[in-house]
Length: 309
Image (cartoon, rainbow, N blue to C red; front, side):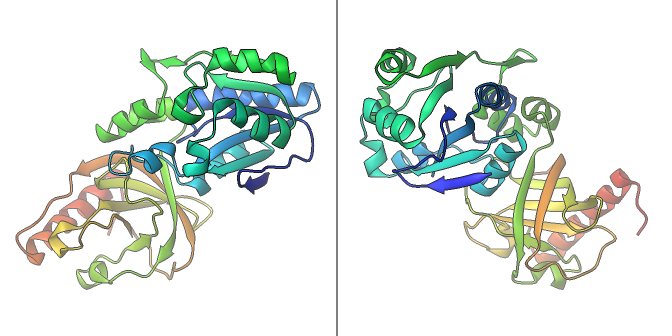
């Protein structure tokens, strides 16, 4: 899959395009991506996604922006799995925020991507002041000679599939609904980096995964499976949060204690699949109380995975 960046894209062939944040690449996104791929193959075009980084709301209201469901790396990986051939990442900053909607279509989509087909969600808004909508795109389609489709919302279990619905389900630790909305288990990936070795000092060594975003949709202690170490997933307990007992501050960390595994994982790219929530993160009165709770968490995890010590 070809990946490009900037406000001045240059396509190598004519494209069928969809535009959006695609945070989480849920089933609603996937249905739209499937349509883009179908059109591209039928008309010998390049299946293309135009997306943004950071999320526009992170630029406009950084303190109130929604938690990211996926890092840019994970999003790109999922887009590739859906058959997308080219992803263009527009850096979201003042120049893009102030770009009039007609200019976005003319300069980025038509000239930059050589767009012949455009597929959007039924609630898609774009351009300065979010002035662009389906009606404007339909008017511009005559001027710029592209075909336009709007995909209707997808409903699952009486829930409109959206990134917001996925975040809400994650907050409620409803992983059954999360998996239904995503069409797959919820995962976070990251490279293993050096930490402060406190887990090892407490008797529970952890792999510390580097997170690109401080604002995550999950917080607490979880039963997980870890991919990327062996040819099969490995059972583990994960803590996602700020470690208040250790006075770790506001930095969010994902720490994974692998069950029945020892080895050096520094620098490895791991994927953590979330299965179930054990408890909320909490501040304990001392390290002994924290150690006892971790011991209880690990014992419960071993029972869940049917493992012996």
